[in-house]
Length: 187
Image (cartoon, rainbow, N blue to C red; front, side, top):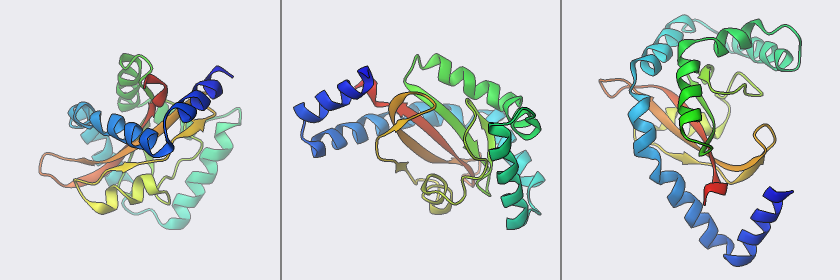
């Protein structure tokens, strides 16, 4: 309830366009910080390894994996979810989220097919390749930026915007993408 009241107060005080600009500026101000850890070897090698592993997947294979993930999220057995959550790169992302002291609500990496590579928290689906967070970054090149609208995230119980960026290797080649949920309650 406190979160809803905070948003109502913000909307009443600031015109919506001013609030949107402030959110956009705040989210984009975090890009340099995020890019520093996107070049970490765990991130780059984790994505490259999965790109190789998934090189021969068909869309039918991807759909099957996504369906499996969705079932596991609410199920007892979670082999695919556990595989991703136990990766070293997921541990790295959990640390980055914890170090942000509430600024980051979630962080997840995607490969060159839009499939989850590592994450700080369990996502509702495994395949992000059909969503703007992947299409507007991975497919658009090394300098692409995608900032979502502010939404209430049920899993984190916060109002957040999602910042998505391409992940590049040391040669400048786009190898994957990242999405970082950013709490706007810090504003």
